[in-house]
Length: 495
Image (cartoon, rainbow, N blue to C red; front, side):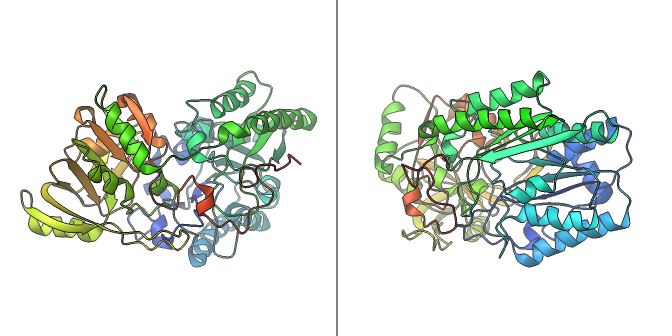
């Protein structure tokens, strides 16, 4: 069996996560032949598992693929529904093995460890068979995830260009175990640190080097799988933070030694996993000065990244861009379905005056989320659909939903009816914006944009605006994460 149940939960996010959020069309969960046809030969975890199964000549089915964009805690009824679909399918069929594409940072109403709970329920109806699990690098590991799995593999790259490859690695180990070629054993551990997401990119030290070491052990055969999970700090759960998992062929002592090496390396580099924000007005001023020499300058409105659970409707960075008179700016974007409808009603070429953004309440933050009034001309109206050529989502059909571009004369603002991170060139070109020709490209993204848009950037400026993905941990009230933990507690001990 191949299945997917994935959600990265930002416990500070006001965005709800009902069952409909897990449905590709907003109504029905993906399954069966439709899921196979859609995801085969794609860069997804399900695509990777399908590849392994087909190469092995195995019969398989896909009872459910439930993947939701990051948001607040998963609705309990939604969780129960997907769990039931999976356990009923497993109970009805004598599967030789299970391949599960999960995330590792799912929080459910009343349950801190969604994946551990799911796997525990699966083991109640499938107590002895092998289970291969692929996880996102931002997984927050709990003991139940390890105990209930035969093999766990995590991404080595951020941006996540190896999602399918990670699933192929986990699935291949399962196939070899079924054939009696390997006997997987697992060791794992964690350290009390919350790496800032903006410092987790594998384009630079320290995560680049740590992930490379883990991958080298896989390449030389020392480990079947070696994974470092940098964790998801926006999930206020007890085990949030960095962990490592190593799977070897029958050698638990060796697996433990490799886990300790990875954790030691990460702990020694903990200061380099820290991101310190500068005042927003200073960031915008620095970008304005840099544009006199090179362009385009990419401005990252990283505190409101919807791919980490942001509402995607905060306006602090946009307001500062306008206040400091930056010119020739593309701003992607503001989630505001009402504003999109108003632009549609006005039509292309019409002048509109709109209050955009600021619709979501952000109770986790002390700062109010305010709209901004703009006077602009409707430049583009689009259905927002395209087939992705980005290495981060290669081959997938992407829908941004109804989209409008309004032009203030200095800033082209993308208005969205669906929360989606701007990580691909096509997302801009599909709505008439060529990022290569803009002086400034402002995007609500953290790191995924680097996979496709990254090579276009002459310079990058991180802008600490407003949002529940803030890298300023002092703005958030952590209640459940274990303490002491670095950097919430700068003198936190390793033990």
